[in-house]
Image 1 (cartoon, rainbow, N blue to C red):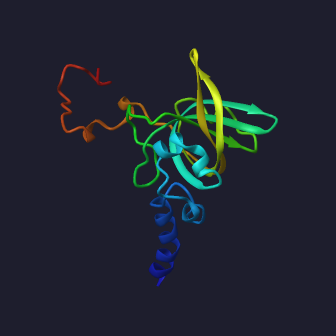
Image 2: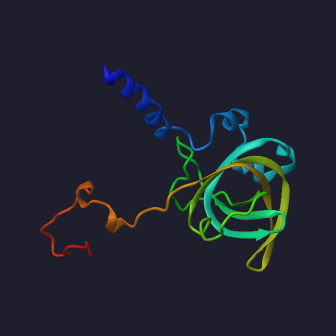
Image 3: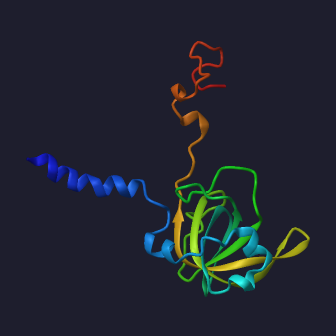
Length: 171
C-alpha cells in the first residue's frame, strides 16, 4: 500500500534530476534557432529575443546596476550543460540585475543562461577592443565544479590497472 505513495513522491524528484538546465516556462519562450554565431554576427537582429547560451565564466564584476558576467561560450549538451571542450564561438556578457557573489560565480565555473539580447557592449581583450553580445539574465544555472580526475573512482577507467607502479594516487 505504501509503494504507490512512495512512487508518487519519488517520481517528481527523479524527473527533476533529468530535467533541462532552464525551466520549461523560460525555455518555451526562447528562440531555438538563435545560434551563438548568428547572435555574435548580428546582435541587433536578435534584440528583444530570449536565447539560451552557456559556457565558462571568465570574469564577474559587481556594479550599482547589478552583476556583469563575462562568459566564454561553449556548445550546450542535451541537458543544457556546457560541453567540456577547447572549442568556443567567442565571448558574451550577461547582466544580472541583482548582485551575485564573485567567489561563487568564479572563473572556470560552467554556467547556462537564459535571457534577452539587448545589444552589444565593447570590452578590451588584451590590446584590442571587441564587441560582445549583451544579455539581460532571466534565469541562470550555475553548474557544480568539476571534480579533479583523481577523485573519480578508478574502476570507471577501462584501462585502470591497480597493480601498476603509479601507486595509490594514480601518478
